[in-house]
Length: 197
Picture (cartoon, helix red, strand yellow):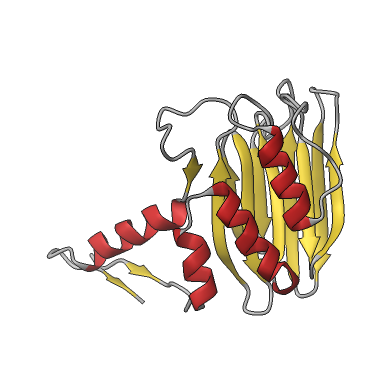
């Protein structure tokens, strides 16, 4: 059985942000390119915790122009959207039973975003969910950052900053794109068939 996985042709900048594991360096990279992408931040479970310090919050606010300091937002839902370098949406709630949802058109693309408070009992609960057109992305605990190339219509990068507890203290910044590239490489090199388009 052949597996066909279509990968976009990432730019050099996109490859650079996909490879970056340092939170503060990542914020600096996003700051340089925020005018060219839609950047979406969605909290899952809790945007704040022991691994999210005032320095992390300040770096986010400075790099992306965010207004809300999330250091004290323990278990609160949170969504921020930066489009063309401007913060066009930023919301949190102290009601942990509520979810923040955004369902909107951005140019040619349809976005659905969900961030639930820790006690939220709706369809997605406390999870972070982003749907761009027909592609759904589920985030995990912490702050989930999505960088969307709206001109070419693909997700350029996704990373999650684990804000609460991390079993891998060296890398609390989780980079699924790096994991995906390893999986695609394994599929491509599998002697039983498969390929990456």
